[in-house]
Length: 120
Image (cartoon, rainbow, N blue to C red; front, top):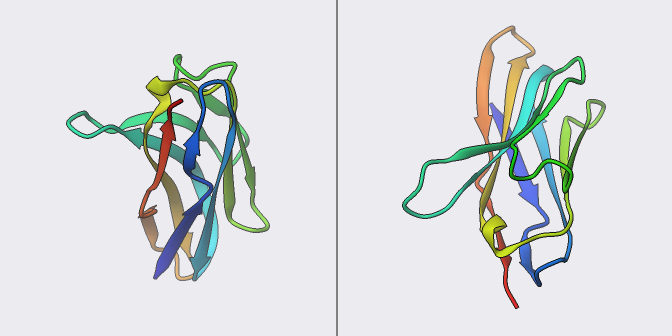
């Protein structure tokens, strides 16, 4: 079984910064793509940023230049540095990791979500 634990959300003023973290635990052999998604109540979950095992990173147009994604494979961790936050970034943020377990099973793991609120 694989568990993802997210942290780093909270309340921040417009223009501020937050850093989200996501650490996976369990019987993990390797992790393919890692990603952050976000969702606002009543709207579809959207991809914020993703990174492949080879290091290819994609960002949503709305966060390009403001958010920085990074991964630490030694820790099965994913980080999202969010700068110049705006109220439009307010959402629940979810971590996703495509895990290959120690017995070769592929598992699409999701975190429980962490809330980010940008407000003055």
